[in-house]
Image (cartoon, rainbow, N blue to C red; front, side):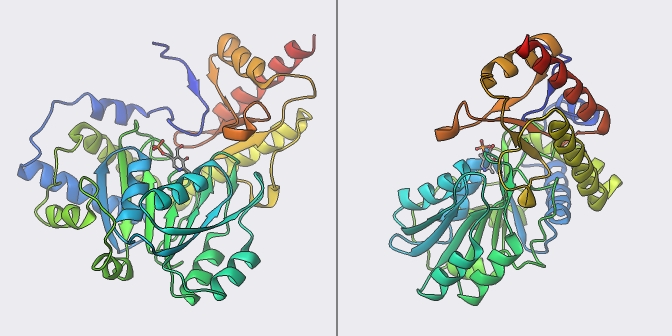
Length: 362
Ligand SMILES: Cc1ncc(COP(=O)(O)O)c(C=O)c1O
């Protein structure tokens, strides 16, 4: 166990002391008034984070479980669905819909590009659609999509929006109600500064209406059951109570700071990393107009293997950064800057990267 490792990947993130302390507390019963109070407070805190008055359900699952819930509760096999993918996680959301039998049409951007809003608009207008699926912040490419525009188009077309905001929630604005997002998914191990293991799903009235007739199979991820249990201060199945205690601690930290200030800190840190990477002569990966405030992707110098950079950063500087996924494996590097991120950590990672590049060139 390396206690001093600086985790600079796009989740899991480092944990603040308050969260670590919460995780060490004794267990509690999950059918108790104490848990009922805890889940009510966590739900309200998440609604604050999501900027919503919609129902908010907490699942003991990784983010992908939340994505599966977001698809299977609102769609039926054969439903025409438009999946907009700009990277690995967009592919996953559409693949879940395909797995459960939706009739999926894909619009895929080149990695590093945002969603093609014009094409999405034309495609939606030319057909009848049950839902538009897309990623708010594409972690694999460090691109934040124009969510508000995509949502407006979906509403015009009468389609539900099912949005993966797993890596952006908490670190970047996701204005669920203002933007009219129907189903939004987030996860614990990103800007919420928690270990992996909880997924959060917000559900609009319109989405609940759709769920009345949605026939995709579901059991563990049945959100109607989750809502009925929540009304009794419970969850349908045994929740990870330790993570709920930690979630409350994390939400208290965020609420005390104010979400706008947390977004601002993420934006400032992202700018420091982007500027620092450019100063080191490294080429950014992707369209910088849509650059993410929680993760930055950039290309290694010509002839330098990203794996060597990641290895040197880890061994000599005790800093964990990561590479590219899928078809782009080995082509670029990614630094996560979310959760507990601050200016000092950004400067430490940039200084280490500078030394690492010098070592790679000699
Ligand atoms: C945008 C996005 N979607 C989905 C996931 C999948 O979440 P999990 O690995 O918690 O299942 C991730 C995880 O990195 C992500 O960044």
